[in-house]
Image 1 (cartoon, rainbow, N blue to C red):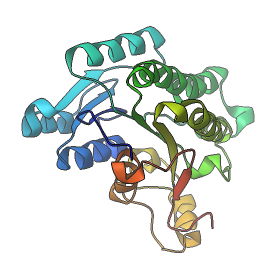
Image 2: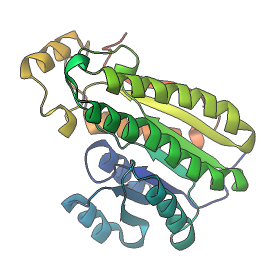
Image 3: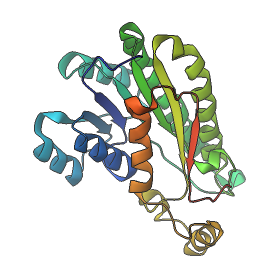
Image 4: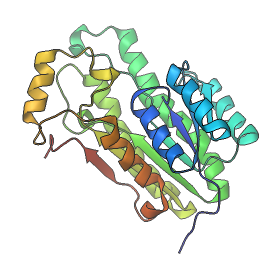
Length: 246
C-alpha cells in the first residue's frame, strides 16, 4: 500500500476568495499547509495568514503570465516546501453570445483558464514526478459537460480541462500521481453575481435539490480527492451540481 511520505502542502490557484478560499480553509482545518495565489490578496487571505501562521502563505500570480508562474512554483519549492497537492481553481468567464464577444475577451478566457492551467500543472508535475508523489485536482464546470448559452469560450476550456485530466492521469499514474476533476454546478460565488436573476432562478428550478451550490458543497469533495482516502481514484470527473445534469 502506498502511503504519503511528505508533509501535505497544497498549491491553490485563485485562492483569495470564493471556492479557492473555501478549499484553503478546509485543508488548513485538517492541519495541512496551503500556498494560495491570485492576482491580489484579500481581507480573507490576511485573516488566514494571521490565524494559521506558517501554515498559510499567499503569493501574487497571474495564470496568463507563464514566466511568473514558473518563478512562483520555484519560489514555493525553494522557500516553503515540496508541493504535494495542486488545485487548479483560478479562472474567469465572460458571458455573451459568441458572435458578440470581442476577440481579446475570447483570448483572455483561453489564456487564463486553459493555457495558464496547463502551464501551471506542467511546472508543478516536474517536481511531483521526481518525488513520485502528487495529487492534482482541477476545477472544471457543468458548462464543460452540457454547455450553456453565452458561454462558448468558457465551456470550451472547461471541457478541455476534462480532457487534460484524463490524459494526465495516464501519463502520471506510474509516478504515483493522481489527477482528477470536479465539476461544480452554479454556486453562490462572485462568478454568478452578475448573472441575470431570471436565468439563475430557472437554473435553481431545474436543480433537483432546489438551490444553488455553496462553497462548502464542493470544497469537501476537493479535500477528499487530495487525501489518502482517494489514493486509488484517478482520471475521474466528480460532478457536484445538486443533480442539475442528471
